[in-house]
Image (cartoon, rainbow, N blue to C red; front, top):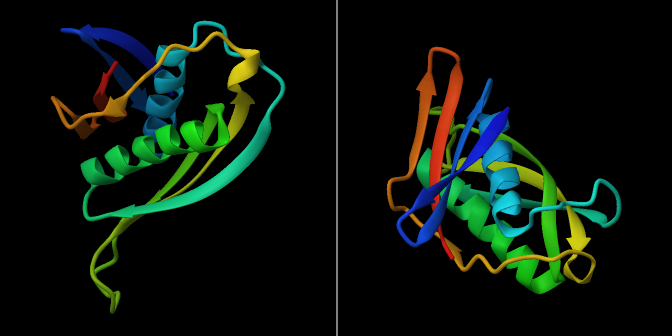
Length: 143
């Protein structure tokens, strides 16, 4: 999995690839952390877990990243070393079809890093698509 930061008008974008949907979601989240902080500590911080659900892949990616921004603000940490496990809806479920994500991140205290503010994730130009090599994602963040 990998990511690159891209310029986008007055905002910043993350373009990521991964062998699986899990990997590309995690890579976008790591890219979001890199957009907020140039030097991420390799140690320190407590790991936390969370779950999000949405009606589609793009909505799930949006809600996942939005949850990380929320966790950043509430816990006062920079979410790094992100792991994501994505589950697609099953047509035989009795409940409405829903995509789910079980995630975890290591929360580095913001007091320990020089972090820039990142206001929000956007749907602008968002892409989550399967490729011949795995998965591709592109997300723009409001800074």
